[in-house]
Image (cartoon, rainbow, N blue to C red; front, side, top):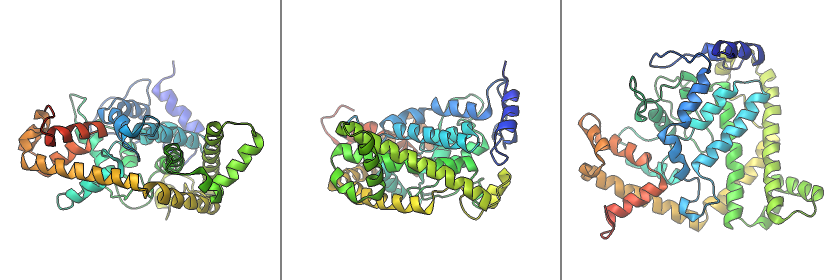
Length: 384
């Protein structure tokens, strides 16, 4: 039988000296006995997957609201893509795969309905009432809002996974550190892996969804270096591919190129920054896990293109603006008449701030639930 202790010995033997070892965890807020044959981060991963907030990611959107079609990414499919990429990078760099995967699975738990438009709306509404940030809210989800255990609130995840949630940062994430996680220094190595995996997933699924929707014309991609480079290679290797398979292979190749670049450049930076142990990561003046300057330049060109053609498209702007109006209208109704909240949420008003209770309720909604609630609140003939 392979016990937890045996797993920890294997980590000590096989992982890099700067990887986060399970035996060195800072532990959980609420004391509990660890499982005899399951690793601590493996348990965290399972707790995240079984969480209500994780299941709701299926109906929370990335760019396209769920009723726009079944082929587009949701927060759930994006999360799974990030976890897959992060696990690959962590394995090659001899980091803790279980920890990277757990952080990846949890990194979007704090997201609102309707993508970043929903977060922007709640951030504005909560500006004078403690604010709203999806990373900090994700930490709140796993520490307070999930109700699954008799002895403590939340999921009681390890310090390292919670730090990964709150310190997760990409160009899409305005990081705001929550107590007790120190703001100084970069996050642990495994969190940095998730950060770059998130960027890789974003680059490619936004491109894929944009092409699928017709909002991005493939002919316009011929001037994008990254796309042109892989597309020529795919056409040369497989001249008779159908358009859909060729497009899939091109995007797959871009992912492979970015993953390989991130791994190779990170290996160089480990030597450059003289990283020998986990504590050295915190002392570094910048993130260790990064793309090479060449890849960064190519990615930036593609991101600028996607921003102009997809995020600034009038259809996407209409969806985002509509989402903001939905959320603001519901927020005002619940704030003015909190007795319209469901009983289990309304009961919190006796001890908690009204703004935060309403914010938590709306942030936890899926796109579909938010749309249904809006109809019930504002359409006179809709059954309540």
